[in-house]
Amino acid sequence: MAAAGAPAAAPPVAAGTPLLAKAALAVGAFVLLGVVFGIIEGRQPLLQTTVDGLVTGGYLALGAVGLSFVYGILRFINFAQGDFLTFGAYSALLLNVGLGLPLIPSVLFGFVATAALSVALELTLWRPMRTRGATGLQLILAAIGLAFVIRYGIQFVAGPEIHSFRANVTTGLSLGGGVRIGRTILITSLVAYAVLIATALALRYTNLGKQLRALADNLDLAETTGFDTRRLIVIVWAVGGGLAGLAGAMYALSTGAFNPQFGFALLLPLFAAVLLGGVGNPYGAIVGGVILGLAQEWSTLFVGGEWKPVVIFGVLILTLILRPNGVFGSAGRV
Image (cartoon, rainbow, N blue to C red; front, side):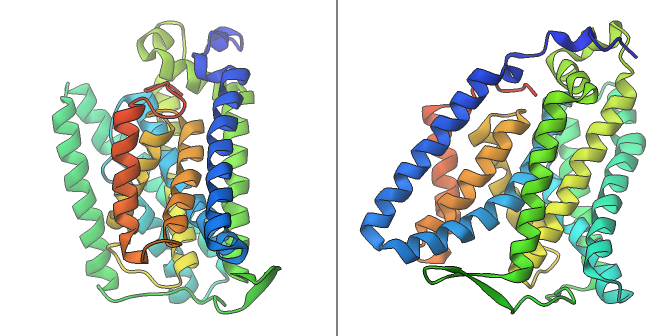
């Protein structure tokens, strides 16, 4: 292990002022857009879609952070990330419905089980492939194949039908002004944002976070200066997988019904959130996920809900045209 001062030369994204300035600019632009929507469509529809957008943004940001973590460290695009969300949801479902356990320990089990799966795959699949000099294309094809294995393995065991948790998803709470939200959805969203904030703070202020930033800045240099890179990479996979599992459980609770295909359907929004925030930048992934969630729900003020995928494609294309490195402009960095 390197001394605590070794990672001091962190990549530029760690600097507080540019990071906060860009985040404030992105949030400010969306607040302004929200005001315009409010003037056009009225206060109540705007507030309701904003609440719905924050719910969507919570689980998108969780899944996108894990995806961004892995790419930021290993420069590897994990096409199985969406199916990690599915695995987390069905792991929680196993305890909640299959064994009749309460919701909280079931969701925690989904988090731990997905983190364990992610670590096991690093030790048995990804590390051996990297050791043998696998190319980027080979790793991508392996990830795509793994996604099919996870998805249809879950479908083989649990069946293709729609499932739901044993939880009260019908009781709603009034937030005032005609805005309502389900009690379970509110709790899960608060947990999602608490985890996101804790992850961002840990990455920025803890010694482990500084080591991960140094690892993302230059993996080879970090290894030669004494970092235990193998242990840190395992931690990256554990965090990324755990957050994906939690995101999957949050999605399942928020929607109330899900099947083994939902993780695949969320893969494009996850990639769009990562690109919007800045590839390999977990801070940007958080902002990108929230912005994308708001954009999806605000679009329903003008078009039907079936057009949400078009909104995602639109955000993705505009980002690639106008700012290819994303809002935070630090591709490949943590």
